[in-house]
Image (cartoon, rainbow, N blue to C red; front, side, top):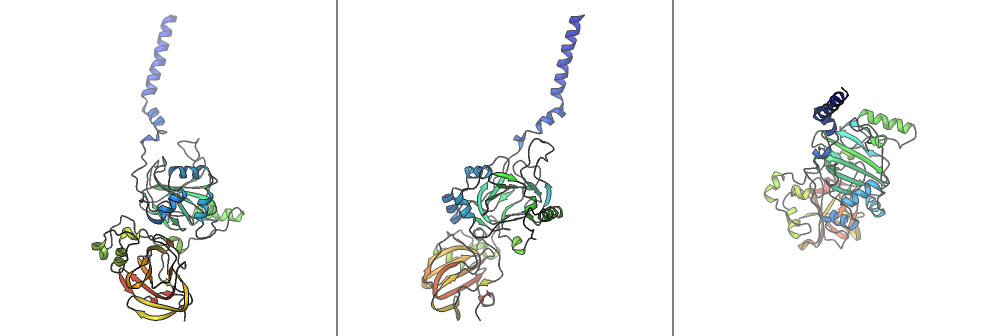
Length: 409
């Protein structure tokens, strides 16, 4: 009798074990923690090129090693110096997705893994929505080599903060790129460990993740209330509403089709070549070329020579003259696409601007910029006594006199 009972007990235990192994609910519970079915792709990141690529290589940015350091340690001092290119203090952050919804916060909030801390804030939005830089800085990483993050961008900011933007459908900036607050850096997607289109935003200080919610400007009403309460308690600087400059229109994507006016003339031409300079004086820039123009969008151009006076029209623009050589300044933010001698124009600098405009500064005495340099509005780029200034929109010469800002009386 005792032997029979022992046999039955053994069979019962075996049967229960077999049922548990075959129970689909148990299988799904275990599979819940198996993230191997997620893919980090498709990989959609810009091809490094130009001055940004050279800057990234000289600083050691753009690698998985640099990304790992930023996720666990304070940024290298040379990276902080490179991030301080605008010499502006960073105290607050811009909500990274216009009209994006707050869906998950910082801390132990996961239902599936309550033992894991969520190191950031999740912002949901439709696929393809613009993701903006939360503050001025430099792109330290733009790739999808960090498992689980998908197409990811990491920025270093002047005050030592590091911001991360994950799960993008694509990134639109390359390592070494200098970014301004509000500049487009990616598009919303669902790559990596993601169950829907959103941006996973992280803020790190000295390699440690911190809760960024009270530091955001803009965002949904709940986020604005958190920021207001934190300011009232004296924990954060005063919130500010996003300015028009924070939400300026982004330039076209690198692989967008060229404009109809320039479609027949979209053959790639290397930066710095005379062929490119002549092409820009005849046709609108291609979308691929325009994607390399960095900076803010303007509706006017800055008077290009401080102390100079308007000397009349020329065949290629206007003449700005002075009694002595004066500094020549960039009329708007942009990227230098030519710097050298250009036929009868002599020493010439050509700047491509993100709104598609092209400005030419000719008859220069000295040139102080190189091809690929990103220049800000008002930055000194050359010296000249008699400057020949030319503005072109869609390849057509435009009289700049009605568009000048700060022009002398």
